[in-house]
Length: 335
Image 1 (cartoon, rainbow, N blue to C red):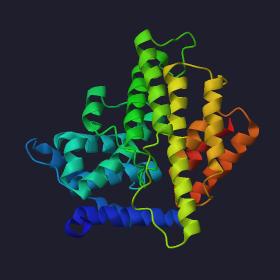
Image 2: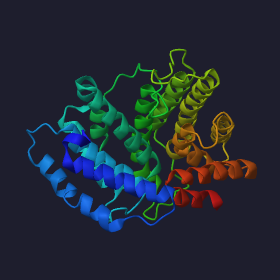
Image 3: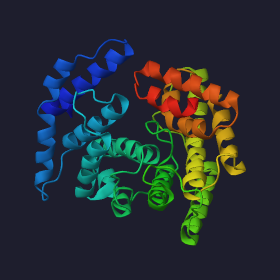
Image 4: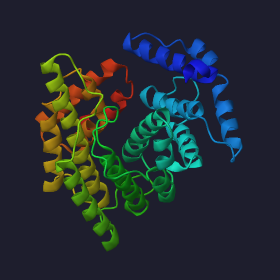
């Protein structure tokens, strides 16, 4: 796509330059990056101006890459545009193209972009606050997918079934946040979910458990290695990553929807399971980079000092991948 689209190629160059600079612990080439991306924002707006126009994969890829880079390296372009705004543009594009089902069947490139968007959107909504989030109706359009897909996606680290459940958890957490949180984002101690919300949460707990233990789970077909030992490690890490995301979803349900205390046995059981799964993932592996969300989720509610120390050590290692936002995520774990 980038070879046929100058804007996408420029954004790819900017993305690569920023990421490499952080890997080498060098200043980012800000002037060059600004030159590469100077026309991208206006061109994306033009792509949405005509409702009857089918948005191209290149435009969608640009919007997703802008959101991804803003999450990994805030203000990399010298422009303070929240990642939620870039992601909302991508969401509008997906809706304009008929949602997930339509894109999934159209081409391999479209499906790849859909998976990339789903990873950023669902985890961003679970971990990044509730301001400016899409309506549940919009979420339903975007995640109208096959809920019987139990194949672990090597890009996401978990199954499509898990994606759909996490999206519903994010919707419930968003719905509850309006009454559960005060204006200063502090939790109202007297708040309790309605019976309807509680029933939905209990159903999602059952869905998570069934999805996590399903015998239908399959490893990604892209997984292959000439060395048997490496292949077995990759299989083990992929299974552990998928399981960790299910436990992380459970923590969010218990804490943010059912309003349970951090010390609650259900919360601590999920935290303990996530921590135990870290031992099945090699330090510095690509699977470890996918575990940022489960690790942060467990770290925020971990009560044991050894658990917190382990999580902090693994998260600090992810900074070596050039993810500058990790330092910001560590602050809640230190407190």
